Length: 280
Image (tube, rainbow, N blue to C red):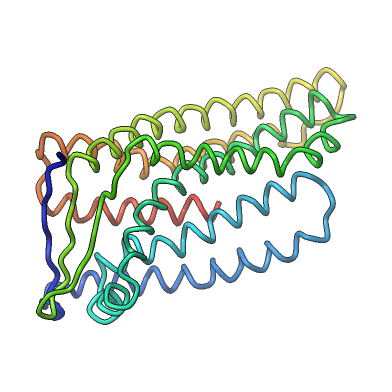
């Protein structure tokens, strides 16, 4: 049977929560405009028939839902809006937070696949420049479906609820099933390391392939190779925060070596990194 830990939240916030209020304000200041832009481009790109823009739309849709889900999964629990909103959610829709936590693992995998698919598309456009668009247009829905199924498999591999919530005496109790969470974090951290190096390898391979193809065909590079290299390194840089938190948190849940303040600010690293991945 899984180990169980209970954490409770009171309705009143202590004065030290000023920092959390500031972080929430910052996230809203950049998050709302970013969300509006993602929704705008999601709709705007519909008029372009090329299969690349269908993948961009998939990437945008993934990041939109990931961002919205993160407000339920992390920000409601850790930041200053929780006294009113968290109680409303747990009281009226008690299963929403549990579902949101499960979806957070799903979106980790979907963000990777929707990002790396753009680089793979670039590679196929070079290697199969005559037929690539027809192939991607025909199968991108099937590929998206496979991404979704794969994103669910790591959660299905660990059956049972990882968190539950209930309210007693004006206090929210969150029940952690520690063993399940440790297993989920271990799987996620290992996959995150794999994703990190795949993004780096595929991104740099795309840049090298573009540069070499242009040299063979005597086409001026015009900095395209360097631009693709910078894009690959940017993806890796913004993903490093997710890599750091996933690995360190998984290890810490087993050995409990991190000071509490690092655990708290590790959540900030995770949230800002996830937002950055969704914005690049």
